[in-house]
Length: 263
Image (cartoon, rainbow, N blue to C red; front, side, top):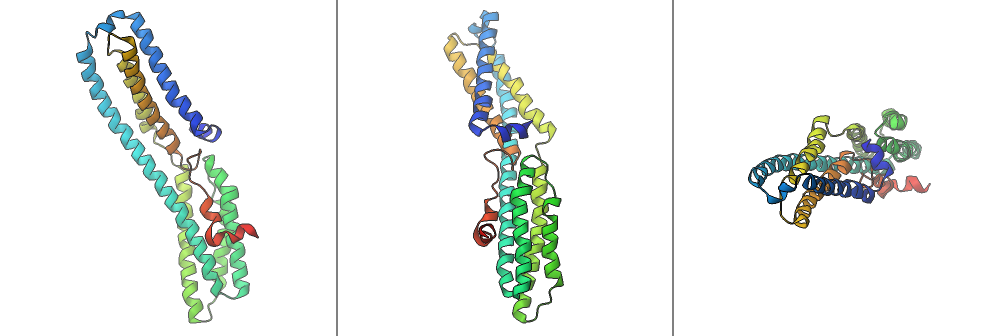
């Protein structure tokens, strides 16, 4: 469900639905409860409600902070993995300049096929939460075959050959890490804590009575807006390859890899 929302709706629309919807529900609930129990306006139970609200708010705030920081760290790590994989591909392309023309042409063909497969085939699959190793396996194996069948003829070629092999191994490792990140999502228990906590905390604000209705609605709406925005962050950060704030495949089109897109 979250993948569909992220891929079909803009961040602004999601914000309007999440934050606006949370505030609207909170305000409507507060007004309905106040009309049903007019005595709440006298604030007879504010002491007890204040303690309970403060305790629940502190626990829920810690949980939300933990979840958001974890998801942000995951997004940052995914961006680093993508940038490192593209950098290693670019370094292999530069190292290939030291090889004979025939070997360089075969390696360039394999690298070109790989970056195109990543951006055009694998990336849409990752956005949909269904990454596939097969999308790039043939091109990666072709690059390994070129290097495994080549025997360097000079010390200079040996140096660049060793570097190219090392970078290609790194590409294989980073590809696995990238696809693993595309499959990860917030564990169900943390999802229950993050979204279920809002269901518990927001209704508690209805019980905190204030004589002026406008003041109480401002209080309730402020708490609901903060919770709604936090839940929006959880939603958009949970999937690093989906939505407008997702990791971009731009590194595979830049630098030394740009020539594979102009040919």
